[in-house]
Picture 1: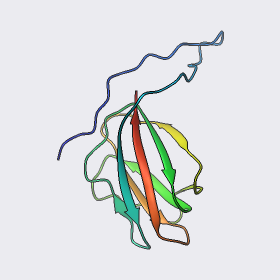
Picture 2 (picture 1 turned 135 degrees about the horizontal axis):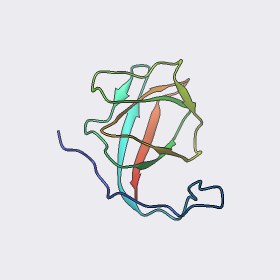
Picture 3 (picture 1 turned 30 degrees about the horizontal axis):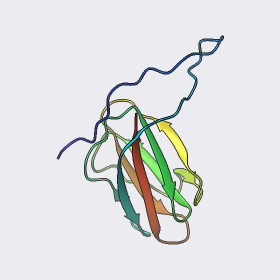
Length: 110
C-alpha cells in the first residue's frame, strides 16, 4: 500500500508557546463510504494534519493497524462539520455510521 504523505509544517507560536493554526494547503482528499459495517482507508496517512468532514453523523477511529475498526462507541463526528486532527506517524482512519450511511472525506493538509 502507498502512504498518503505531506511535508512537515512549522506553525507560528503564540506568547504561551502554543501553536497557532494558520491557513493550510489541501493536498489530497480520499473518501471512505461507511454503513453499519466499519470501513477503513486503504492507504496509510503520514501527514501531520488532516481535515475530516462527513455527510452524516459518523463514529471515527484513528489507529496504526489496518484491521482496527471503528465502533459506535468511538468518537462522534457530526455531519457537515469540518474537524482538523493532528496525526502521529503512519495512521489509518476507520468510520462507522451513527444512524445513516454516508461518506467521510479525509483531506491531507500542509
